[in-house]
Each structure stands twice: as structure tokens, then as C-alpha cells.
Image (tube, rainbow, N blue to C red; front, top):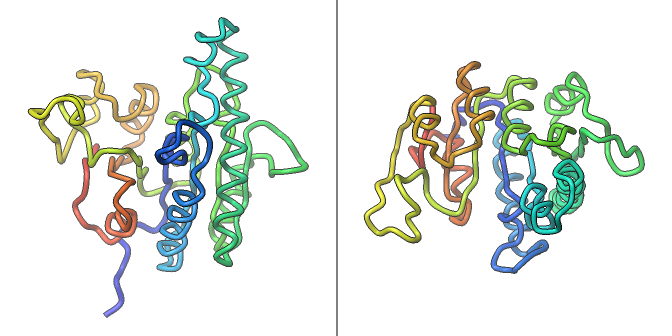
Length: 239
């Protein structure tokens, strides 16, 4: 019996740190290939996949600007360019498995990526291409979490899959507090009231206003993306 996906179109939100693996910075080639392989497997099940990438493995806008005493907007633009580097690396890794991809950027750079156009993005997905969204929203002061929520709603995605290094949302950092409680289900308002670090408040508010569920899961366990796509109860669901 063929396994049937419970989602038709998904947005996978990957932080830049997810790509660096155990390295201090940059891109871990083994992690990149593993992620690409998992995404290709899901795509071949008939799921339309869009990816939103962060750039923290190369440069993080807000903290980077603070560290270097530069203007916040300048730091954010540098962070957006970092996401483009990650997007090109991801594109190359996925296409080595024989699939077509499109990198779509909120900041135009015609030589290396397509400008983001909503209708074109949807067309790419419907034609079997994996779409990689980079450069955030194209605006400073907005995170790539917010970009993920915005793009997910624009392309009518069924869910945002938020990849992290732990298996869901906890009452405290489970890596530091052994008594931290894991939540399997949360309401948007609970996340906002308690200031839980699921996604930033703007992203969560956008999802709440448009009833778009968020699944927070552990990226480090290979096969988790497929398990969620098939409806297995993993991580934390915010709805």
C-alpha cells in the first residue's frame, strides 16, 4: 500500500545554523546532502515543497550589527545576502539528485536567482520544481521566520515545518534544564503570551490570523520530514 501524504504543499523553514552542522560557521556538506536527500524523498511522494532559509551560519543581521556597531538595517541586508549563499548551495545539492529547483529572491539579482513573484512561485511548485525563497522579505527588521509565514500564506501552503535542534517546544531550554516540559500541542495565543521561542511574534501572529499551522520538529533525526508529511505525531504543533 502506497504511503499517502497528509499535506499537499509545505513550507520548510531552515535556519542557517541547521546547515552548519557541528562547524563553528559556514556550510557542512554532509548536512546539506542529507537535508537535500530528505527533501527529494518527500517531493517524490507528490508533495510540493518550498524552502525558506536563514543566514545565521554566515551572518546574523541583528546580533552581527550590534557586534560590529553598524546600522541595524545594514546588518539585516548583509544577513539577507547570506541567505542567498545558502540558497545557491541548497539548489546545487538538490539538483544533484535530478530534480529541478528555482531560487527566488526578495532582492533582485538576475544573474543568480529569479525575482520573487507570487504567481510564478506557485507555477513552479505546480510544475514539480522545488522553490527556495531567499533574502527574507527584502526588508530590514523582519526575520526569516516572518518571511516563512508570509511566503507560506502567499503560496497557500498547508503548513510550516519549522526545523530546530530539539524535538519540539519546551517550557525551558531542554539542553540546559532537565526538568523542562515538552508541549505536544500549543495555541498561537499561548506562544505569544508566554514568549515561547517557536518563531518570532510577527510570524506567529501572521499564522494565527490566517489559521496556518506550525509544526516544530527535530531536524537532526533523519527521516523526520517524511514522518511529519505522512501524518506521524512529532514535535510540537501550534494551531
